[in-house]
Length: 432
Image (cartoon, rainbow, N blue to C red):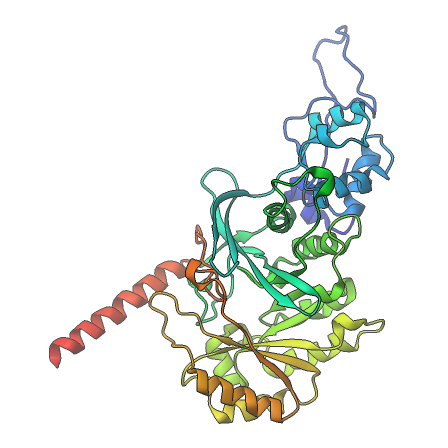
């Protein structure tokens, strides 16, 4: 039995969450009486099906394939994602017989929490172990803030173990890349963030507390497209988190073909990690620019906004711009940004650089950042300066590192570069 909603055959070959194959028992003795497995009494299986990362369409197909009505999908989704229940025995509006069946063949499991840290400013960070055995570690951050709608809680979710890109100012990229996260590992981050506020609350009184999601954690979301898309569909689903399209944001460094595909598949807010206003500088800071230069990236953003049937989530693109002292924060860079973005409805978010060990950059001064902001604001752009939160627990933007079983050798290369730089500095000191 295959669950094929919204995924390719390649995904089904590799992802046990999207496959629920049940083999009939077989005996080499023809006269031996074998139990007949009816749809209502599936035989024992060696690996339980994880329901955590299944979309509603996938869950509906799953229930049909085990001989149940598809409306059970909505019931189970609510228990998982609205009441944060992982024990089938606690799902009181489901028959005891079905609960026993689900207990036998299914599980509800997100990534393992190995560390959690709560900042004095309210920021929360979790470190998750993903994969079997020692695995690798990824990080997730929740940032609280007051706004006109009340207490906002924004969760920054990771999509990969490490990152396949190597932006020069980002500590995550220096850890290299190990693998993509699965849907249950992605949506499990949102589940845990909500549950952290509800652990001591009676099940019937639990509610969803995370108001905003940004796919801005470890990894490039558009390079893990299917899993990220499926996870965002769960975020928007009224049977799960029921989030507004305006409150789910995908951030990309500029994978142009996937931006166009995203416009066809889902309606969420788009953010671009720009960080440089010209190709020469962006090639250095964001190397994917060599493949998809600024002209292509801006055109893709314009197409994303212009997609038929757009709602408020696509009225503009958020531009993220980390401020690096003496690198991309000069007056001419602000003027170049004005020219670059003049035909793109956008809001600009200036991000103070958060240093990490041996980083080759420094944070722009407060005065320079304010001057940069004023230039853009005077030109008619909505431009804000991001407030740095969670830096006391290494949870600020650009500081998510995790622990990566690197397949790219980038971490080793970065370590070698740092050692060589230290030797040069020591040698220079000896000469002086």
